[in-house]
Image 1 (cartoon, rainbow, N blue to C red):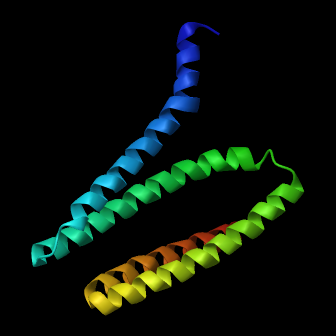
Image 2 (cartoon, rainbow, N blue to C red):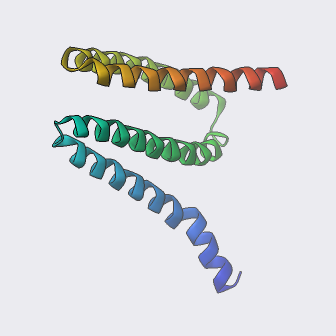
Amino acid sequence: MDRQEFFIQLWRRYFRPALVIMISLFIIYLLYQTAKNITTFVGMISDIVLLMAALVTVYILKTFLEKQWNKVYARLSDRTQENINILSKVAVLIGDCILGIIIFQLWQRNWLYASALMVIVLIGIIREAKKDFKNKKRL
């Protein structure tokens, strides 16, 4: 292995994943700081745009981390994989409860925010259902 191959491998394995995670977290932090001080009608529209940008950032981060996770997950034993599956189902349930609480709080403050969040969540659920259906159809 020469120096160029070493640096390419170093970039692919360590620096690029760290850079993607750092950039994603920085974007989410900036979006949070920007959205924290907005209260007018223009602020409401920019909130929606910021929310969409944050969701796109989270989606990119999720797809990137899924690829990395699949490599690690394949190396684990069957019992460990089973325990991780159980923990992930519990985490999804807790996440759904937290999302319900957030939607309820937004609904009490402003129905538009809650409606926008519910539409985004429903679009995500529909996409996941379509993806699962296509995967089952292929098998």
